[in-house]
Length: 274
Image 1 (cartoon, rainbow, N blue to C red):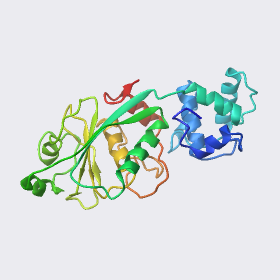
Image 2: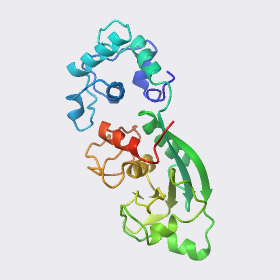
Image 3: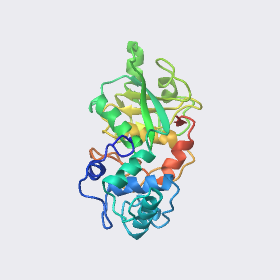
Image 4: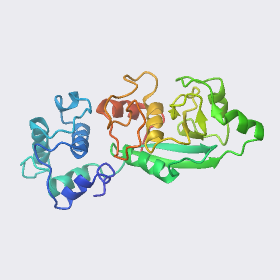
């Protein structure tokens, strides 16, 4: 498969390669991604988008009916099964990314999780929804001893608007980035022991900050806060599979987003059409 929306999912790759098709009764992330694709193609899934995972990832009667309609539009046998030919049609319907987010990394500390994995995880999550996460630049901040002492621990409370204090000073360090891109800072730790990241930033300077012991999907999560902005509700999800789940976990399974989250993210000035 060529489409970035499906390439990271082994179940969809298998179906595209003449493996076991997805059929009614299937319940997993692969179905969720197909439902999101159907929504982007204009198909309605009112029942399936009412669940906590929104879409719910359940291949029920509503999803089957939408698949049949898609197959009919593609001059395929409308059997409601997602196998090789149907996956090929989905693949060709989303040949490339539709949006991009460019990240610039500024580091005061080496992360416990290898940086390449943190970046790859962010790329994988957002690619599922046609958003290309691009590496813009990387820079180790060479601080003076005084600055190292000051920023070794961020004592300021994380908030949405950070126009003053340690966060604002920190996010002024290093090479600047366009205000259409996102700066990602890695620090040693925060005063709040359980805090691993903060998506707050100064006005017109999109940025987020993470502790060196952050988990694998935490940078993608904090970038998600930047994309969603302060007005989006709920701020966090109760769904453990959602990228915006309210607690950081070391779980390595790829995260998902809801249709409402994706709709809001695509409106962000730092999520630009390509």
